Image (cartoon, rainbow, N blue to C red; front, top):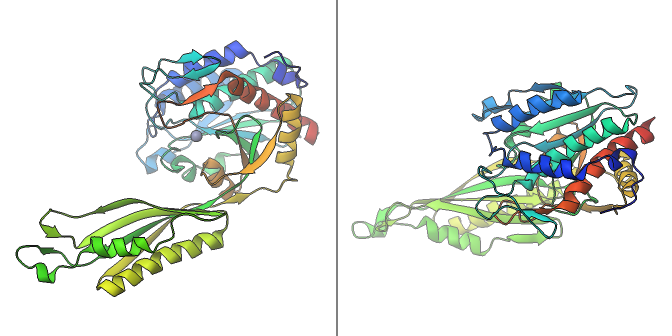
Length: 386
Ligand SMILES: [Zn+2]
């Protein structure tokens, strides 16, 4: 990959060093809520790069080992607004005993664990990029790292983050499967819905005449429920059904759990109301009742194309011969929670594939480009703000 780079900092990104760092980080076991080993590694390495570090106490809300890590590095020019880079320290499954396999320029595990490219690829790239920034001696503003815990089960660490510890207002999160250059400006609102359907429990041989199957009511409701891709902006799903006691008992209750995502808050609420309504109609028809519980997952975000963060990605990508492309996602990320808490940020692609499975992989090209783009973003941020 000998390409002409116009970013001084990006041209200092050392490909071999980044690859080795990624493999080292990926091998550190840190499934959700058990991120202590990753935190220990960072607490040792980040100060060597000039960061002061602090942990919050988010983990006390969910019995985790360690809180979110906030790391701050002064700029060579303190008049430049600070820029943050964020990712999560946890992986969806353990990476203990990870044996990386590199084939045709792509990094895999040996198929017995996940690779952990989601999102150790970002973590390694941030560290290498900062090394490159230091080695290139370019002027830069303050840099902050927001490294969350317990992201995979539903952005939990970010939700309990102590936002008073954070000095930046704008930043980037590399955590998406698009090739480097992917720039996600819009993310969905999301809520969970629990429908507890009640009929009447009875024994088939003793008092079957009193029975009213909650399953049958729920099935009737489900048959008329719009699910899947509801419209261009909205997705709905029932993902869990729980109920029943014995094969001889007519089930008295069943709980259906699902979620809705939409770029439009109004459409999200409309769909939730629809799910409630059709189930209530089915229950009314068949002599049952329904209890509804809604639980907000996260809020959406929508960053305008003319925002300086977007301009900065466009400039920085061109400096490393990467073509930026603007898009949106119905996936959720810490980006949703950070934006909701006043930290304006966008998600960037780092090109990992098949995440959350043993077939997870990332190309060396995307890994290197993530490092280069991070370095180039820091360099351009200075140029765009000086
Ligand atoms: Zn991720």
